[in-house]
Length: 398
Image (cartoon, rainbow, N blue to C red; front, side, top):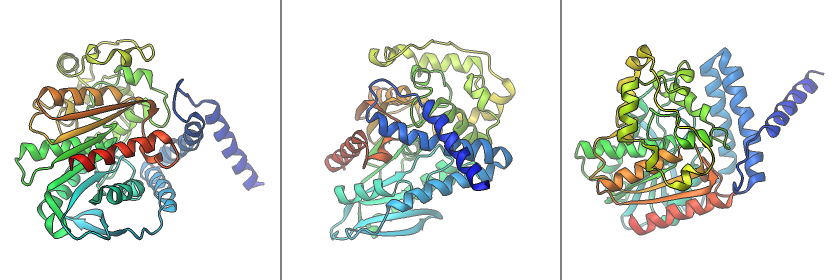
């Protein structure tokens, strides 16, 4: 009887989400995407809104356990790679080295996504394996600390510390220190951009050669951009998820979700300045603005108490790289965005600002796909195309 009630409840939850999945017209692999979203959203709901409402750390640890466990199910041994877990300056990492390597190889540091809350070396295992084998490179996957245990800037500092260690000890790890790139997806793309900025600011040697930013989050001021409005209910990453992740990253809890949703977490004068200098919607391509209707909601009065408590973090270029005053003298960049993604517009604007400062940039928008598709590279064609593009870029440029 009890088991039947539980199963019935799960079926009801899945049925509810199946009926309420928003599938954009023209989205690639619609049935695969729908099925994935139907599975993912109840996991988020149960861990965050049910378990997390009772005990937030327990909800987060359950979410991590589920995603790490699902990822480990896909990963067996690989005869072409030597894979080992170790620490770089106290930061857990996983190192992938091609078995046949003899000479010094290129190196690539990868930072996983997951909203600064979940994700791990396990969740990007297959991506890192593919890059290591196909580029013939030593790949380092960084396991940085996350919310709610820590908040900004600690995740960024973990990523920076591991990267500096790798660059400093590259030759001992079989890597040519002049051929090291960094990259990541989503929150990991944010980290790659921020680490690139910090290493440049500190004139760190040896320099990073390339940065690969995969649908990166690069600003935490404006959550009303056209892509936020157009893709608020798109597959995988909803607008409300970013409100949650940003609150967690700033405070270790979800107390700021509502104020972030309305853009009231930032003072009115700062909103005006950012819109004028960094996030003018008129700078976006016409096809972005015309993808579907949106409303320019302008600026609003901010909550002074909230703003004063978070302004140093929100305005830091190491949390919001788009707001950096100088985007020159950075590693060459490959920036990837997706058409059905709330982060599309800021990724595009970041690529354009880097170009304006003289940084060499390759920019690609996968217009008919969604945030997180790279993790499904083995089952969704567009995810495979994205991975192929990253590998081709690294083979040529690294």
